[in-house]
Length: 99
Image (tube, rainbow, N blue to C red; front, side):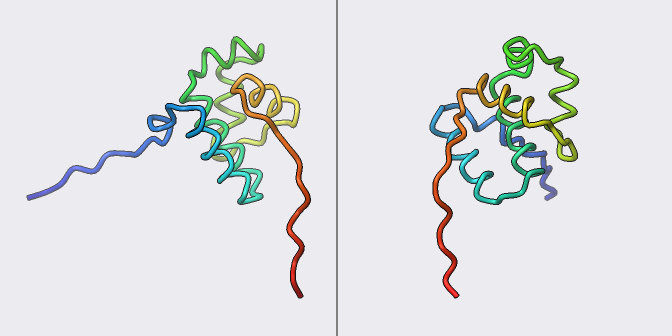
């Protein structure tokens, strides 16, 4: 018997504000700008790219391109999308490295 595999889309599971916050916290912990941008794109798709485009004044195409796996959004674009998504960027002291 052969099983058919389908592509998993994490956007389908991001249905709550807490789920989105947890997802983005995990992305921020990586400190990988590309991964963080891609994660923001996933959240934007979960919320509806057209809605995010309308709220930010950016085109859907620009959002898809900027937050794709190989995208490189500007800080201005990133902050606009985060605001539209209801995600805050906060700062805290980095954990001290033990030598």
